[in-house]
Image 1 (cartoon, rainbow, N blue to C red):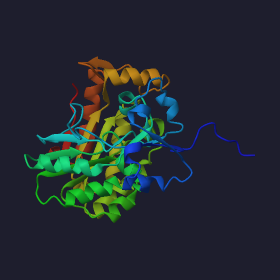
Image 2 (cartoon, helix red, strand yellow):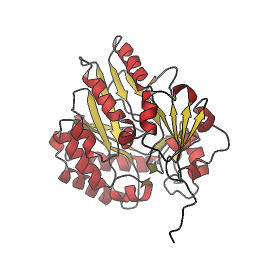
Image 3 (spheres, helix red, strand yellow):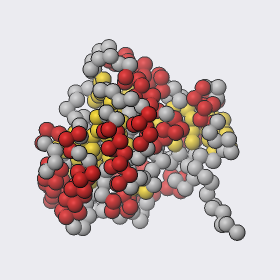
Image 4 (spheres, rainbow, N blue to C red):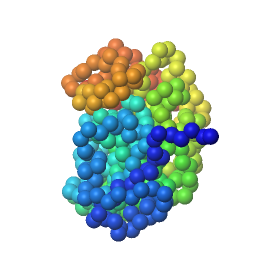
Length: 340
């Protein structure tokens, strides 16, 4: 007899705010989960922000929460994130939390829950962006608080952002969609436009296997990168965060050589790189919830409220990564995040 898991399947329970139960997008999503239990609630925070949660255990059986986003929907970019020289740097969250389980991810320190929230009123975010564009240009990151593309079969939000960007007939909007997802169909089925950058986060296979749980392999990501390039997308390679390990110099040089043996450097829009760094508040929570994680419990230094590698290791990571990537990309295409 097959042994039954003590945990429920992902999204076996779906919470829906009562005020949006007739929303078109709510009905579309629920139609894909006919066997899930549907629970109606007043507000998503009643579930997502309740006291006494164990987010580490919730990863075993995540629930889905469908909600409406109120108030401000577009925010100024954070100091730990790169603006790539764009003065008007913003981000937005049409979803919260991720299908993947990367041990080093700041979301584990940012949210008390591992459940996934989908804000179904994405059109209201579009309207806020349109109003901002009347005043100034906008560089907008749409997938910092989730891997939006990993949810594409559920929400189609990557498609929605691509279509929105294609209807902005000026050069004032630039949208970054960051992902580890290897769903090639997204880039085959949606027509590229100049206002979209697809930013693929890539890591050595060792890092993926040790710390980036449930994510696609490096080869799968590289294949997807080539598909996006072949279909006309601007592609950014994100060597970020770089995780230090034994024999780092050889491993990282081998990694970058392998990446550019599979991907034509001349077709890359640009790249980002930077070593692991995170706020002390988030790290405190992450260490409490995952005492066995090697990457979380490394003896980082607290510099001005951010945990990062000791200076000597920081400099080693920077030198090796810049030299390795610099063999293939010119300096003006490499954006390295300086430590704080």
